[in-house]
Length: 364
Image (cartoon, rainbow, N blue to C red; front, side, top):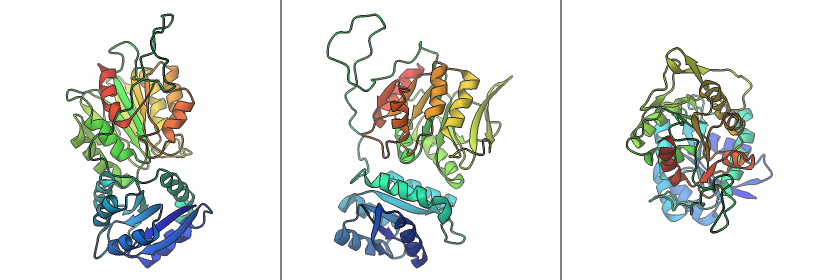
């Protein structure tokens, strides 16, 4: 049973969230709080497994409360955020501070679309609560011991027995990786920032990112990635070209497709396919890259719920593309990378702080 504390200054929102969460037999709301100060008192008394935390509250804001929670009572915190650009900036800052995810709410009516998100919310809360107490990273995560390189086919294998997980990637012949594509969902924003911050300073390979998040968030997130690493990153628009030194984030609510024309590779933003479970979808972008560039792309799948990216990765691997998956220990939710690993599609399984360096080495 996952024990949840709901924190919001709106009585309506406290009631709405409580009703949604308790519709799932796996979850029990052990209490509610009306602001940050009330939340700290309730956390100390009730010791919930997970906290949902409103951003804007009187007396003590969500960010102020989050800082105190991470310092005094570290545990998974899910922010409840308005779908505005200002709300996006505050929410992304909260993720940097240690929040594990966010729930969007409509500020025009202060009503959550219960039918649309109830099941997804409950699944997410259960998955995040299993992660246990968390603290925001104050220094890079310690890398897992890398596996020894796989011997060439037909050559002798010496030394210790290889670990079951693949080691650092050995992409196809040097210079063949000309593009990089990364997919992520729950826990993805801070993970992607860490990947970008670990890219080499001279990194200029065109890169596309598919992160599950609302439309109002992706522009602000692209600017954060631009500040974090060597690439100029923007929210993708139809007509943008994949050129050296440029990175693109798929806009929320639409798919990002890579096409080839006489001038090279160009992005197209589309609602098709309309039946996709996610929009944007990692699978859609990966498949389009396979059609446009074959295997000359390094595909990376980071933390997230579900299996988006697995089938697109399967197509890319069929064209000979190299691949990396984030390891379980450093994932907020080991869903998307797990799907790739269990399908046998990952050439390397690495901790988050090793991925940026591995990407840089793969494109050299």
